[in-house]
Length: 282
Image 1 (cartoon, rainbow, N blue to C red):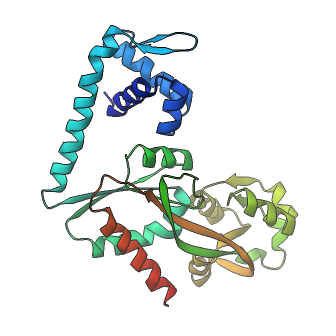
Image 2 (image 1 turned 60 degrees about the horizontal axis):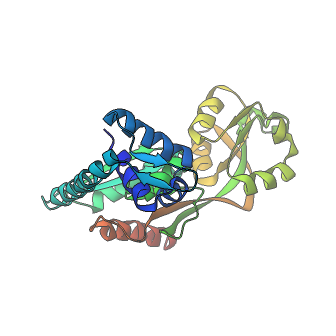
Image 3 (image 1 turned 90 degrees about the horizontal axis):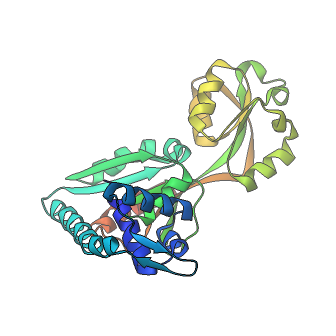
C-alpha cells in the first residue's frame, strides 16, 4: 500500500472536508476521493459517512486512524535513522528541459562536492513536481516554470538567452523552414509568435528539448534554442546560429520547502548556491 494514501486519509480525517484536504495536500479533489476509495476497497470498509454538509469517520475509520498515525510516524523515524548511518539521501526531480539545460551537467558538480550522499534523480512534469514537493516525496525540484506557493523557497539557478538557429543547409532561407516549435511557456511563446509568425505553422510542436533535438537531427529545420545548447551544436558544425532573441530567455529554478524534514538539506542548497556564484563570477 502507498503510504501517501494513509497520509491523505489522515488529512481528510483532520479537516473533515475533501476539498480542504486536497488544497492542503496540493492534490485535486478527485485524486483525494480516489485515494480514499482505494483505501476503503483495501480494508473492505467505509471509512467516512458522507452527509450533505458534514463528513464523519465511521467506526472502521476511527479504528484505522491511530494505526495510520503510528505508521506514518514510524516511517519518518526510519528515514531519520537511515540518515544517521553516515549516508545522506537527496531526492531531486526535474522537468525534462530543466534537466537538459542545467542538471545534466550540474549533477556531476553536485556529486563532486557532496561526499557520502546518495542522490536519487527523476524526471516528471510540472504538475507532478509541485505535488511531490508538497508531499515531502522529494527534497529539491528543478523547473523552467516555477509554481506558486507560500510554502516554498525559489532560487534562480541559471538564465539562458534564446536564439534563432537552423540546419546548415537552410541558412539562406531559415524562416521558410521554421518547422519546430518548442514550448517555453505562454508569455515567451506569445512574443516569439509575434517576431516569427511562421512558427504558428510548425509541423512539430513539443515541450521537450530532447524530442526537438532528436527531430532536428533527421529533419532540416529552423529552431529557437537556449544559446548554451545552440553553441555546442554550432561548434560541431550541425547548426548555424542566426540571431539572438535578447532579452528573451529561459530560466532554471531550484525549489524546495521552507520547512523541510531533511536536516541536511541546507548543505545541498549551499552547493547549488556556490555553483550559481561561480557561474556569475566567470
